[in-house]
Length: 357
Image 1 (cartoon, rainbow, N blue to C red):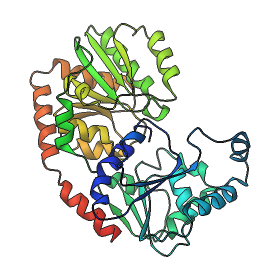
Image 2 (cartoon, helix red, strand yellow):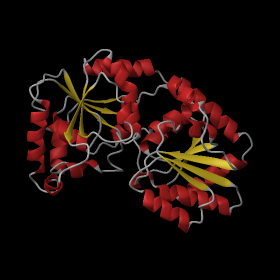
Image 3 (cartoon, one colour):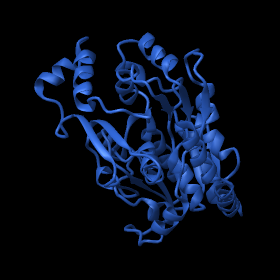
């Protein structure tokens, strides 16, 4: 529960599910800043101790025997409980755990939140690409969060596929956004919200900010989140002489005041399925500047933001347009709210419940 978009969507979905189902959540490690937000009426299991793997388990993790070890541990943990449905909410580790339970007689459904073609990170958790393909060929249904994520699925399998968009709680987001923003806005303020991780290409975002500042504009950036790439981010801020205009806020339970207060949200990722942070920004009427990934094309193709190519220069050009073109920011804000208002979360919830039966 590291605070990413998929985890926040799960937290939004769980209260709706627990009203109709008994829910058990299975984790590799029960860790992360969002663990405390899990509902009390959900049964929670963790394959490994929350403090991490033992030395033996860390060594075993890099051997061919890892999967047999985890399979035995998983069966001891789950026991003989009967399930109406088993759902793997993410690719990679979650799908691997699910693969050990495919023999159970119930509905097997898996979600894909990313563009697996552009960002093929998940295969390394399976014994092989063949094993990953066999998993997707065996489940009852594969659910994608966007049409583009489905079209970029790398495996040819006969499994039925379906697109169900991410659920967001617009009223909750708007209410939380009205809390006081901890940071005072300076100049034209951009905001990044998400994990500080390599696929988000924060180096690209920082270079874009540096370019816009060299063009003479007083641009500032808030980076709201935490992650394993923080050291590289800090190093790049120093190299680009951006210490005075970039603020690393760390992780926060409520990023929405930052998103409401900024002039535009920025996302420079190499790959996105359907970025929750953009859905949230649209709910707040915040313009977005994002690279052309599968999910951003689908969301911003309806308005509310500008799409950039995968270069710092293209992102800088888009940012500069919002600063300099009269009326553009206002139009993007209006489009964002219009796009958000057309979402039908009741329909999305109905699709999920129909799928689970």
